[in-house]
Length: 267
Length: 267
Image 1 (spheres, rainbow over the protein chains, first blue to last red):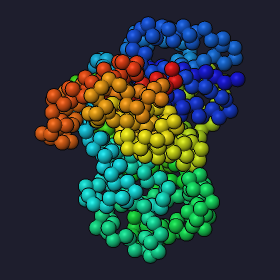
Image 2 (image 1 turned 60 degrees about the horizontal axis):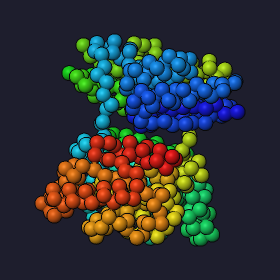
Image 3 (image 1 turned 135 degrees about the horizontal axis):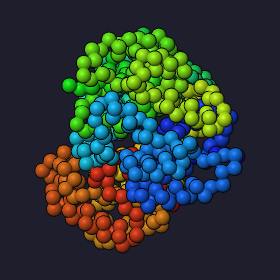
Image 4 (image 1 turned 180 degrees about the horizontal axis):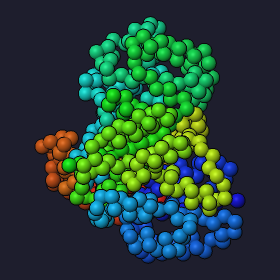
């Protein structure tokens, strides 16, 4: 039987959900079912869901509650009802933080990246426009405005990474796909030569690349083992020769690739 | 003087960073400088950064350390060195969770959404391809495959939301911009009529819309107060008439809009 896990928040609950997933992944022998309830922004809504959780027949698997509430009253209510199976982020960390900083919190639901914060929003949206226009090497001008230019063979993860970097970091990320004619030599494609310091390369295991391409164009030359192997081999030779930092995307998520790239840019 | 805040992790540190930002936003009278150190995946790296933090002259503002380490040895080291100013997610929640579940953790850095998890990766990438092809009403066929179709005036937040939904939720999200000719009546554009149950509308305060458009095309009719006001007024009349759920994006982030939409889809 699966343990029911409630994610409750007076905001999006994204952070509480991430924590729950990371923690519960450490218990691979158990099974969990997550139920997310965001925007519980008045006490009636909190009461309602608390009652619902209490009515669950516990048996051997009492439900778990992960929560993030800026509102103190909501936190107290949950603490009272679910003491031993409640994991509340603010409750856990706020008191020691108040002590250390010598100041009580001023509860505000932090709108750090709202559209109302025009500056930051505009930065992200401009970055997104840039990433979409400069996707897939379709337009190669304006590379001087790029914060980073990702290069790699088709389906090595460039596009999702560029969009993630724009949405989350406000970075202007272009990408350039290495095609057959680029791969026939170990030279850098001419258009990229003056931007070498902005280049970050993505690579991937040929077998994994093949699986991904196979789903896109089954049975084609594009998705054949020989072609995938040849492309990756040639691309890696280019990266080595020109000392371009390389990230292997085979076993990592888009989020991880993005964090590696921001670290690369700042180094 | 600003308090230095270190975000340390043996993985991306994205969750630890989110928690730090949410908690520190509750102390608006203080100033903090965040320094992120992801992928500290061996003890030498952890030692190195711990030494660096210890060397900081504390003065009135001892540095804070937010961390998420799956590795227990790393957690112990940090606990020893920074006891009273350490906020470690796994350390805070793992012991009570182990007790409740009656099982010790099996420390594995959970690769829940890696490219190696081909199924989930493919789903996200297909969703992303879909969102990019169906952005801005450019292609209106294939709407029957959409999980959701966002409608709204230009620059109400449709594109970033669609991309976010694809990247994070694997949802196939199309978007259709309401242009002048759509807004001259209160009818739904013909192409959308058979998909009414998939529609979610985005709206925005005219003044905010104007600010955003002004940065894009300053001094144009497109960014004039009259045009912005007229478009929003007409769009909202359409949404009301056809009972389309509406999200006001004026003061909320892309993440929040996305969570509202996933809640809307599941309801």
